[in-house]
Image (tube, rainbow, N blue to C red):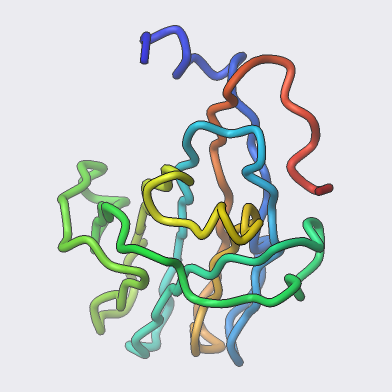
Length: 166
């Protein structure tokens, strides 16, 4: 992949979990990766005075992009590379975590935590079964915390159709 493919003008950004105060678990919006070669899903947790552990879990579905309820939503087929920072505001470098389908953030408070999932559809999704939509769900982000998640999508070719429709 050329470095030009990673230029912002050649990518799409899709909101998965709109910025919200935590509380109960949050289901992300399903986005279509039908015409994507790769997607980086960024999950951000601005933690207040609550040390509750938030787990971000990937899911794939066979349709209903643009909705928080994907058709036949299920776990990813294979693990994906994960990168994280438990104190992103103080140090914006990311460290590699063990490849997985979910990531549990550290139990800390008053920090900004970031998790990045590196999605290559052919490597981790059931494309043969028409599962080409992806989302990320947050478990128990806690009421004192603010969360958001978005995807940076690298298309196979430009222009990419909207990721919010199948």
